[in-house]
Picture 1: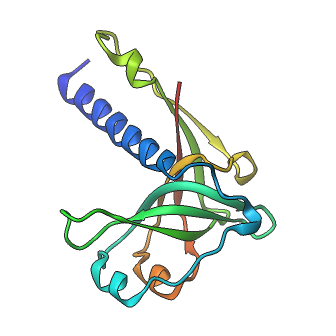
Picture 2: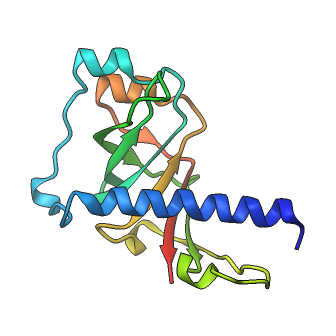
Length: 164
């Protein structure tokens, strides 16, 4: 395997592990009945990045009837030295949204590994998502206005990260 590819795979794994760790710090997942979203405060709106096309976070609730999920997302800041803020975001899923479950080997299995790493991907549906799973949501458009107006953002791709 080429060193550049191996470095890229390790970088993706490290980012995934960080997202999983951040996602588990809050404790048990919120039940769908108590999950709510609130508008970001003015001070937060002036601090977050204006060009946002993706968010990462933990699934808090799933509404199959509306094809929507609520994600406790990390929102990037204008100043990249500042910590991202957590905000519950409603994500709309349409017929063009691709949802994939991406399975990585656990970091412990990578120590001393000299063979290529196998990453498994499978396309899933909204009904296959589980509360508490960590995912990355991407959109084809800037989602800043969705965050500002507390309206659902439409996902183009959702990747669910699993480590085994």
